[in-house]
Length: 113
Length: 114
Image (cartoon, rainbow over all chains, first blue to last red):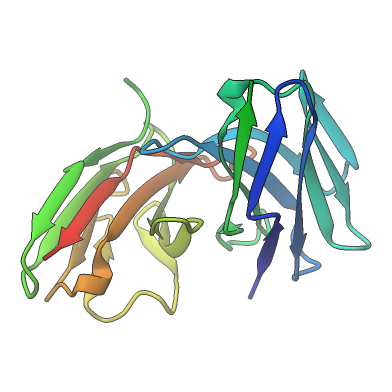
């Protein structure tokens, strides 16, 4: 089955710096890669996703890149703000094939002002 | 609120008791998922339904766990003879398969087994 590894487990940055979180996946058939943000005691919320037919996607300060050959994808947050502090999870899925989303273990991002 | 709703939000139970959680997905979503999350970990997949059919179950789902979605709308997750290791947040999620399949989570049901 699919296995998703996520690094680093914790990340501390200064406000205004960039943050990068990386994930690798094992199943080359995976073709959907969402990122979720989870604040303490809250539900995971989708912040951005990418499908295997594109290599990069941006949404304001957030971008995701995908390298299918290497089976890894990354989340980039620029100009970080204190409200970006949360746990971020990557996930992978063989979309359209009847399999479920498999998550990484998460990265705790702390943005200090 | 038209999001995924879960009930109860918190449950404290004694070891050996049975508990049941309910999930109401986003209206018209045909897929419904159950995940379990413990502190410091990512959501772990338990099982999912497409309409009424339970299509996949994780090896994590022991025979003390059973999930149903009888009419293809709401779902229940029952844990029988609870153990302290069952203490976790049980997350329900739903999606519209065939239309991007973006998965939306509920707020979760916290279970504490004492």
